[in-house]
Length: 146
Image 1 (tube, rainbow, N blue to C red):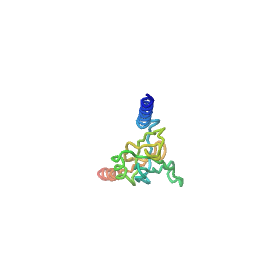
Image 2 (image 1 turned 90 degrees about the vertical axis):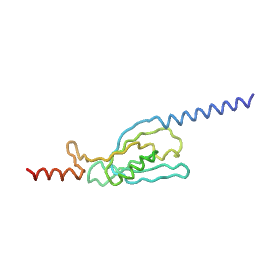
Image 3 (image 1 turned 120 degrees about the horizontal axis):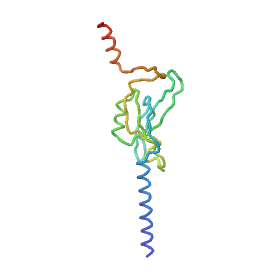
Image 4 (image 1 turned 90 degrees about the horizontal axis):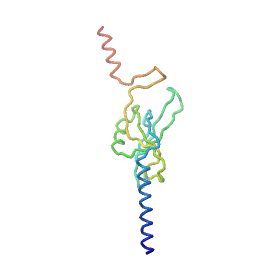
């Protein structure tokens, strides 16, 4: 009789732990986007390998201080996309996961799910620098035609 109770208690505990991890991995505390330049991306870990990176954020152009946004990537396909756009200004969509007890799931709370190349750099409200190299050439060609 006691063996059965111990077994049921362990089974219930295992079920609770499983539900907790499922909820922590599938529920987001917050989500958002950050724009900047990918400064570092590497696959790290002794047993659980995760992609860890840093995004350099520049709040004021020409500023000497650079804020870094550390992030984790769980999906290998997203990590491959990040590798392809290194050196370009990008926008990262992330989800913040709270309550994961170990670093086996990642070293940060911010999990990147999407990446997009940012073609415009906003200097201030109403002032935008276009980084698309084809745009100035097309404007010059149309100006010369007039």
